[in-house]
Image (tube, rainbow over all chains, first blue to last red; front, side):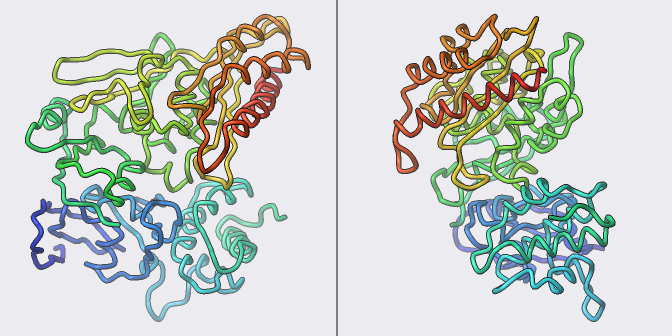
Length: 176
Length: 287
C-alpha cells in the first residue's frame, strides 16, 4: 500500500528508475531520473521544503537528513541510491498540533538560530546524536556540528541547545 | 548545480558490475559513497553516461582480519564504519585517525575508504595513510584480478592504477609496524581539505624507534614518503637531535606545490612543524 508520487516526464533525454523508499514513515513508490538528488526529490517532488539546499557540494550541511538513522548530505546523495531506505526529514520530527520533541524544543528554548536557514540540518544531526547509544562527549559534539555552517550568528546557542537536548535524552553530562 | 543526465545500475554481483563497466557505448563510472563524485557531477566537472553503484554487491561489503592478521576493507565499506570497527581501532589506529580528518561526520557516514583511495585527491588523508601502512590493493577487471602495492597504486593527481573498466574491490593492510602512530594536518577550518598533512607509524623496541614510516599528503601530486627521514630515525630514541635531524631531512626532500591556499615555503615549513608534532605524539603513544 504505497503511494505513487510520479512526476510529469521531462523533455531532456534521461534515464528513469523506479524506487521504493520510506519518507517520514510514509512508504512511497516513485519513478525518478537517475540524476535526481535526494534533496530535490524531497523538496521538489514531495514538497518537503523544510530540508534546505545551500551549497550543493557538501560543505554547508543545510540539506542534512537521516538515511536509516544516519545523518547524510541529501545534496550528495542520489534518490536512486536510497532505494529500500528509511529517510527522515525535519517534517518527520513533530506531528502538527503535538508538542515539540526534545531537540526542537531545545533549539527553541536556547534560541539556537537566527534566520533559520541552517537550522533543519543542525536539528537532524542533533537528532541522531540524541538517539546515540551513549552521550557523545564535547569533542564529538564539536566534530558533528563542524559539518554545519551558520552564517548569521555563532554556535554558542546551538551548542547550548545540543547540551539541553542531550541532558534530556541521556541525562546530565559534562558542561563547559 | 545539478548533474547532467546519466543512467544508473546497482548490480548485485561483482561479475555484473565488471560487465557493466565494460560498456563501450556509455562512459561508465563506479559509484560507491559518492562524496567526491557527486559534487563533481553537481558541478558538471564529470559527465559519465552510466553510474555503476557497487554498494549493493555483497562481496564488497566485508571488513575483517584474515588468518595472517591482515585487515581487509571492502569497496563498499563506509569511512565511519571502518573508523568505528573494533579491529581497526585496535590494530590499525592510524587508519581510524586518518579517517577522523576526512571532511565532516556526515560525509564519512557515506564516503567509502576505497572510494577516497581511487579518487586520489592529492590533499586526501587515506592515500598517505595507506602508503604508511604499506597497503595492497586488489583490482578486478575484465582480465581478472591483480594486486598492486601502495607505491604502484597512486599514479598522479586523481589518477591511480585502476583502469576505467576496473574496480578496486578491497584494500588490504598488513599488521601495523607498531603501537606508535599519528596523523596531523593543517586546515583552515575543521573539515577543509588539508594544505599539508603527515602520517607517522613506528614501533618502539628497547627504547628505540623501529619500522618508522613518514608519509606526507598535500605535498605534491602523490603522497610523499621520506625514506631519508625514516632511516635517520631507525634504531634511536626520539630526542631533540633525532627530531631536528628528521625534520631537516624532510624539509630537504619535499618539493611542495604553491596554490591559492599556501605558498611552497609555507607548506614545507608547515610539513616540518607537523612532522615534529606527529613524531612526538607517535613516540609518546608507545610509552
